[in-house]
Length: 243
Image (cartoon, rainbow, N blue to C red):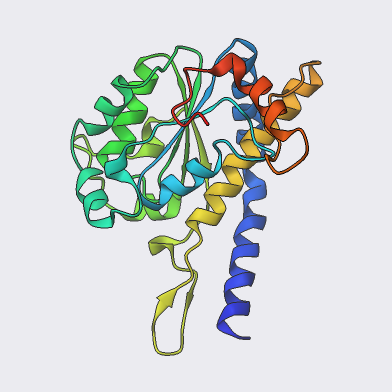
């Protein structure tokens, strides 16, 4: 089996293990749906490469419209040296939360492969203090294998209301080449699957109660722009990356 085939098999195996998240996903989806029915929005956050699944959940065809990205340029994946320093700063995550329009009863998804740095953990803590439900997307295996950098020794999975485990391996490597090179990152793929599954579950919950889910259409389909303008209208001023 080639390295490419091994990597593909590893990813598919990890996706299959995600079936054990169905109960947590259903619970989280219902909370998101309830929040949306009450006029809330879904907040998402990640730093470094964990920002990528959060970005993918916002303003995308087939996705929920009311998704607010808690974005900080200093934590963007294209600034790796900066991210590695900033995400370890005590108090920075709390400051990010304080600058956001977070409302009691809403849901915040915090994505972090390791879950050991202060920023995502303290952001989650502050959000819970403000009455939000926090859903963590993280790797339990990697998180528990590492040492928390939080001043109280806490990890993201310790402070979240609901934990969705990506099952991504320690070090985010799925295979080893013959020369000993470790490779095969999986955390972004798996986190993206979970965040979209959460959104789709919320759509299903809304639909089951007779509420049409606020879903965006491709801007490259006929009528897409007009449809999206109408769907986004109730949320103007609450979404950080409004088109």
